[in-house]
Amino acid sequence: MNNRIKNKLFFIFTFCIVLTAPIDVLASKPAGKTIIAKGKVNAIQVGTTIQRKLKRRAPIFDVDLVKTDVNSQTQFKMLDGGMVALKENSELLISEYEFNVADKTGSVTMELIKGGLRSVTGAIKSEKGNYKLKTPIGSIGIRGTHYEIEIINGELLIAVWKGVVDINIDVGVNEQNISLGEGKDFSYAKIDEVGEVTELLLPPDNFNEGHSSDPQSDSEDDLAVQENDIETQDDNSQSELVIEVSENVAVIENPDVEESDWIPEPAMEELELIVEPFQDEVDVLVPPNNLAELILEKTGSVTYDNISEVAVNSSLGQISNFQASMTINFDNGTIPTGHLVFDDALGEWFAAFNGIINVDSFEMNINFASHGNNKADGDIEAFFLNDLNHTLTNFSLYEIDNKDVTANGSFRVDNVNIK
Image (cartoon, rainbow, N blue to C red):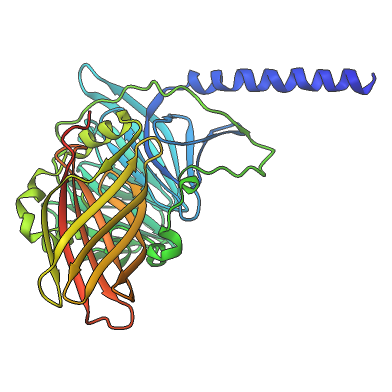
């Protein structure tokens, strides 16, 4: 057989594989949709080498092993209206996600193999034993609406922000069961590899900084987001077949999840402290499930520059001439450009920033800042209010060589014409 015939047969064989692979995936049952995928996030169909790069609106299925790489994370909206956020360096196996829209019943079985996640549960909960999350130390039945777990150096760390979780520990000498959350003695705990439980009065340290497991993840290098960092794929991996599948997966709204459920507890405290001039706005943050659906449906780029309220302080006294603008690209979930500028007694404050949007908040980084002729630095964060038309941004700035010279504040943008 000459080389020409061999090449032709190889082409036909490869084409057949590519043609049939999506059918295998679509034959599986959908479990939800991707809201945000930052960095390298892939789903591997169990029992195969089929790998899919997950991006915004991409479906996930009940045969998927979802993996996040270093400096990568993802958020999903599930069929029953629940939400799952997977941290970096994590692996989550979705074994079963059944949901009956008519009677709001179903069954969930997932397994956290490594890393961490936080979740707001949807219509399916485990009052009847139908929501299970498996871990290396045992299984967790979820009765609550907001919980977080993470595996670090073999220890399982648990925080229950709202509701109750029941943990069946099947490692160690004796099997044991504990419950954490509302109405229980403790809401936080850590469990080691041999099943020893340490119940905690305060959340484990890894949950205290905006639910980030890596204290170094907020460095300038990590948060200087470039558009091609949001959806990346290892082009050198030739042995795995990468495909894309239909985005047509239906998810439901979940009226049981309250507005504050998707705001991490430490972040809520910080928000209340920073935005005191707009305290009433904290109570009208858009419910997480509604916001997820709005983000999924929105396309194109929008510039947010219609400032309706400003509250800014400078260590040098009164400020003036405040302006700010931010562009959000809803096609890939990025904030490619943004800036703010205002004057005080010694000159102009200026800051340029970028980042990505998330359901609970925006991950943003100040790329350049100055005060007059002096270099500056600082922090910035933002949230959607009410809907995609309104944002609230908090910031703090300081001169690098004179940290006593500072400015901080909040501003609200109302772009009422977004559709």
